[in-house]
Image (cartoon, rainbow, N blue to C red; front, side):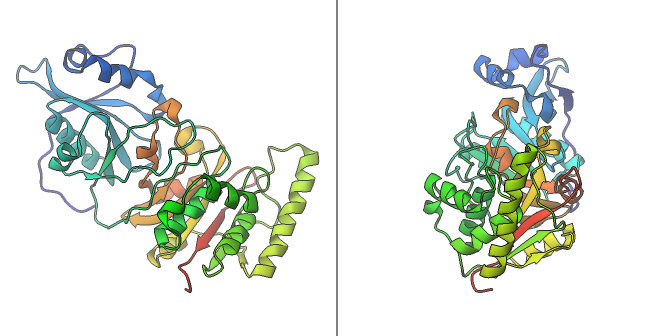
Length: 358
């Protein structure tokens, strides 16, 4: 992170307990705002209040509720109350002290003009929210580090099983291969249907489906095991026929010219691919970010110092997680390395998509 000359803001940081709100916060925050803060169980995302003391040292002049997915490199302001610019300055100062890459801000109560006045840029509204997800109509971001990251469209998966298809579609839209307006549910389900191992998309099948959909886009699959994958949750009888489908996918890869690299894909190679303006569809476990060990596809499309920027097509509404968390999400290299080591019998799976004619 580059050095910053601004002095730290005088503030305090206290855990957020929805059942025992601090008295200064209850006096400061509008009832509807505080009720929204308490409506979700945010405990998995380390909710804290960043408070700016008032002149008397007892009351608060400003406060913000901040959360973040675990093992990531950002903070999210859910809302700020009181002297909003002072609250935001305190959050940014707190994020800088922690060496984070980014602060986001959900647009529940803030306008684009007010966000811009304190250095935040608008996020493009999602083309589709994730299934069952609740969230604000707008969001904002302020980067705290060097490095330009271009913004892809945000499209939330509309089922619990189409994450692989969505990451591929968003990658192609970001690359300019697919018009943004073409990201819709028929496109999502059509690509999933061609890639699925019922209902998951395993790496080879996803790579083949991408190549079939966009023949001019170079596609490579990285899978560092020869055995069928993503079958541990299935009964033995189901594993057998799903394994047959995965062997068929490998045969299809040979026919359509999709190479399968059996070497382990390191983080340095993921960074290098992004530097070449390629897109990396990476299979991760949600255990680190969401607390449950479910395999899930994300799109790696940007890098900043110390972190890879991803698109996650799913948000956990029950935890207060929204598209603002999932969009332009910086994840430290070490965290992403751990998340993408899928267990048991660890493996890594990825699909790398190059630009047309590359």
